[in-house]
Picture (cartoon, rainbow, N blue to C red):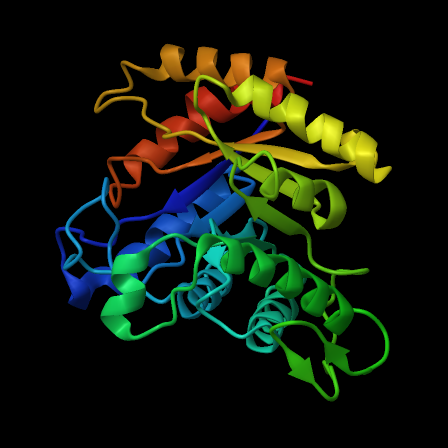
Length: 291
């Protein structure tokens, strides 16, 4: 069982002037502690449940490039990029650049997107749910073709491109892993089975059922279910003094028993890196024993 640290909150005590040094310190500490993944959200406004819209939010791929420069081993990704924010050619190029400059540590985290407030606030198109899922599938097809050999044209309902040239190609071959986020049973999990290398599902009461649905989609698509890395979103809270460590480890053991390979989530106490040191001492060694 592996852990991933997601950084959803940048409203830290030092403010924007100290954010760069704080973020670098957190990234280095997580990398050295043994976190498998280091992730940011892909939002432009802060989201409900984390803080008010006006709180600080960094652009995802600029931030991931910064994190790449301050880490050596952790895989780098968004949890999760909405397809409405970037043209697929730009997104493929961003992930390629991240992969090359991080020595092959990029992961594409992608989903249909949901945040209407920030989209309308900044003037991004926010199509219907049905159209966003059309865009999701077409993005996956476009990006996979761009990461393949050759530079042929691409044509779909929403995109026309004359030459999918991508030079250099990612270091990770055949392509960087694709993590599709969400638990939608009809489309999202079917896309995982058809196109994805990994899924990311919230830790809800029906999370075991979601894996059963994914398994059925894999059977329908002729895909080996065991090929897919199963990740779950779960807040990594050990309490201010580590008093919840046993509770967290027990939950991670339960999730591993269901079939998850990794848990990705936020740590409430950041940017205080002493909490990351507690993870390195008390949590990561305990769950790495799970096989």
